[in-house]
Length: 449
Ligand code: PA5
Image 1: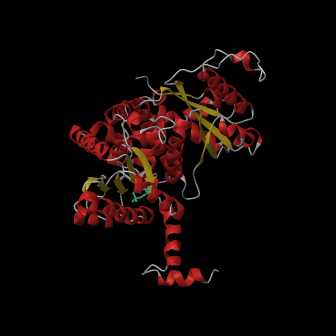
Image 2: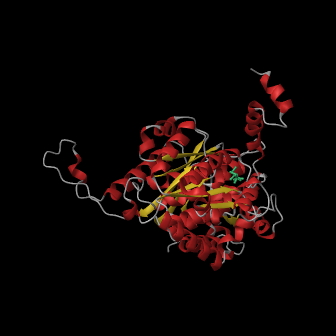
């Protein structure tokens, strides 16, 4: 397994080496405080040692449960929102066949993973139930707090469906709850109904929880090797630990460059990739950075694009819109499969000059050409390179981003592990729906219409 590498040569038009290196002493302190638990949000630092501390018994239990689910389910429904599903989805999509939804279960060799509880859309639920009428399925219901509205609605609906389909006893064997060890309505329900449960550690917040059963169980059910994923994360944990010098620590460099760019007015970061498999890695990253940094009027706005598709939509803005953008590209070295551009006698499209080339060679030139164009257009570029899409590299990427996010949040002076702003919409929604206890808020909000 090669180590993820970070190339910052293409930020030099905007920030000098000195402007980056100036962060070195501060970052050293921040990494130490993440390990000594002396910084903001120090009761949510369990993720720091997750890769090195996860025990074999937990991995074995997850793998055994995954095997059982594979035998009884064609579809595995992961109910959760935010950090309770995005990590699993990011890893599963990164490693899956692009068309796994329509290839046969036997070819896939694992259930197809479906997500619910991440929206409150009536048609989505109705269509999901229509599908589940026809499929054998099992459910993981994931909620750290055990009180989040969206997954609670989804579970209420699916619990009824699965009990009707398999009977109460049969349903019980098909439901796994992943939640807090003691608190919350989900824990109480799981205990009452006798569901198999996994505990989310107290000191790991949702968006940092992909390397706990929250992510590991669905990833294992989807047929991927969770030991290798953890191996990769462990390697990155070692490479970003307090003993590693600044220049050899990729997370430290990424955090420093982002903040140096922010100081120069680059307040919007676009994470891009040229691999459709990485779409949900970008979505997971958006949550990680958006929820961790965006508070107290601070933070870099995290946006995402899928190239080359978005070169034909957002590409225009990136090239010539407001110059407050920098771009980070996740570049994948080699593809899993090989396919070449065919020769065509007619050559009506004029593409014979690339016939015989691998598609990945063309994609690489699109990548390079885009980076050069964007840098020329005053969009500095950070390049992250992994050699292939596999469990180890995705594990590295996850830990790399988590550590950099925590450091970056500390540089900004915020608590990267809370999300107080998420409450605002919930309060209004409950007031509008007339939730008991919200009577005063209901009265106030109704006057606004
Ligand atoms: O990162 C976070 O903590 C949040 O995004 C949560 O994961 C999300 O709000 C879901 O919360 P819960 O797992 O408590 O249902």
